[in-house]
Image (cartoon, rainbow, N blue to C red; front, side):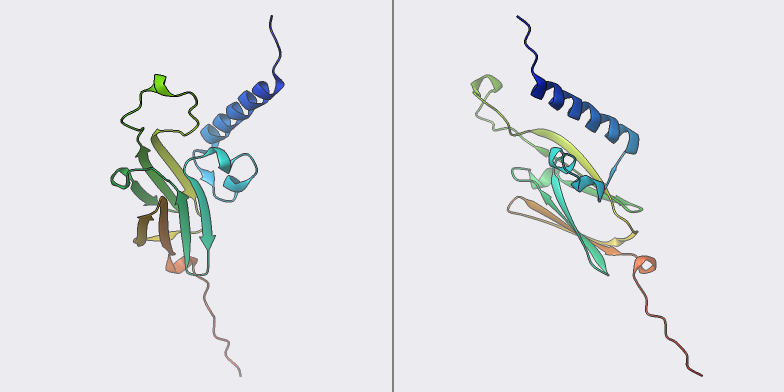
Length: 149
């Protein structure tokens, strides 16, 4: 008996659309990453905070070996890669249910303005990777003096 499972079909369609959008854009502009259904399926999940001088990217990455994390910045795109290794004492056939992903990952996020590549700092603590990216001088707002007279 062949039974129609609409939720499984919708999930398959959503996965196909995510793949298509990723292939089309190459990277996900950070404002689009937070649309419902987009950012929650990416790994690691990100928060991007901006002020006048910098961006701060917080990547939720518990269980990732910090020695595998690499960062690169080109123009206004930050790329984070690394690996989340499976538990060494368990085999795939030992699992009754497995919802936590393991393996290598790459995540790119496009920032609205260029950053100073020489002033990027990163810290990994308690499963959160924090990357601070100073904006380039050209991207920072400037006060223009007004002459009177």
